[in-house]
Length: 490
Length: 73
Picture 1 (cartoon, rainbow over the protein chains, first blue to last red):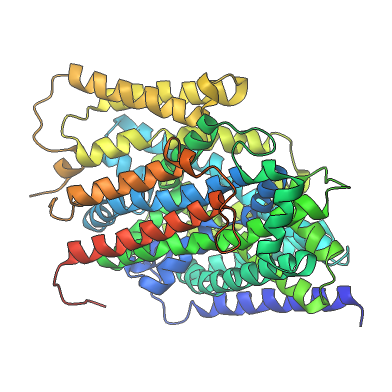
Picture 2: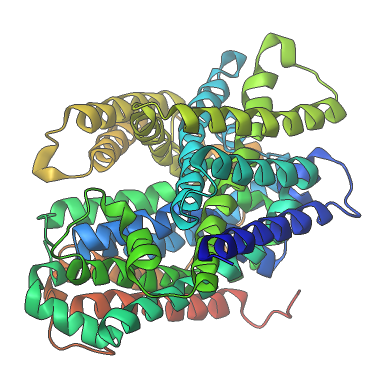
């Protein structure tokens, strides 16, 4: 049997396993909207830990992260830094979000903010809904395209791009459609464990194969290309760009709707906090994947790659002398990363599409819950199909759309913090801050030239927060409670 | 909304130190290759270590906040 057939067979077997686990998660589940979207607000420690873990580590962990280490060197550590620091932000605000969600029945991020800052015709909710979906569909597309690319490369073309991405997308859509958050929970547990083991195995095996160990590998890089091992790295990423990228990513991480909405699903605030206690350890998953990128610096010194993101595939599939079953497992691990993120994105986008966009339009008001649930499940299929078609078309503007839309989503953070903790927070000030902050972010994002090379989103957040605070103080307001507190009947 | 689950001042300082250690200017002092620890260049080891420091801090914060409550899981 040829190697490619073994690799293909192993990977298809893995996809089948994920599909079975995902479909079986449906058993014995009540068919309420809250159950489908938020697991009935009753998800426990282990499953929630892996939902959050596996949804954050996407195809980027196996492709982009090693690519950063290979192309730039230690600036790649920004990923580990921001994922770790994001936990601090979660720790400080997630329990409140979970509690208010339970009390007021919120299922989405837009519902939370729209309740704290009411607008006529719920324009704010509609706006957040549209921007969120615009950010998440390109993100989903990238996962699906990543899966197709991995398939094609690892099976030497037996499974072409279109089929590989279709398989991954189809499996994800099927179990999210059938089982909702329960399906995501159990499959993410499986995929999360898979990713951790494969990442470490792969990282250590690669260092061992080419250098005889991790220590030896870094000694050799130190001799041949020491610039990769200290800041500013091989391509000169300044401290300002590095630090602000960490800070804005850590702060913005909580604003991704698929992460924010998971806070609603926790069984209790204690469960949430336990997840966060353990969470930093999950970011160690990236260390071995960065090793693979670092290995590429020396191994590929004479024949540098045009596209750094291919470093892991090149080393593992083409250069290393790994047995076929190991390559098959590696592919499954990388697919696990892409699919577990894709499942959450499809699930969250469909929920937002129906609850924040559909139900805010005149035709969608006052729908019975059973109908909303049906529409949400249909939305999963529609969103997945749209993302698949986008992956095939691969429009050049996809990444710009992702950066632009997510750049705006991050600017919702100051008004969220204001709603939770600040009794003076004024609605007008929140909107002015959001508008100007988003404009500043988009300006620097697409036209460049941000001061000191800072991250565009960071510049936006500073202007946004300053305006929010200043205008709030200038507005007469006699509230004794923050907007979120004012919602609660005491 | 009760405020009793807000972290203590000590915890907020701890979080602040962890943050500063991973960005400018804290990370400046770690920007070198030697000494290599556990086979890792010092700058990489620095980040691996601070992830663990934050983990320990969260364990302490969790115990502080939950006090002597009985486990509910």
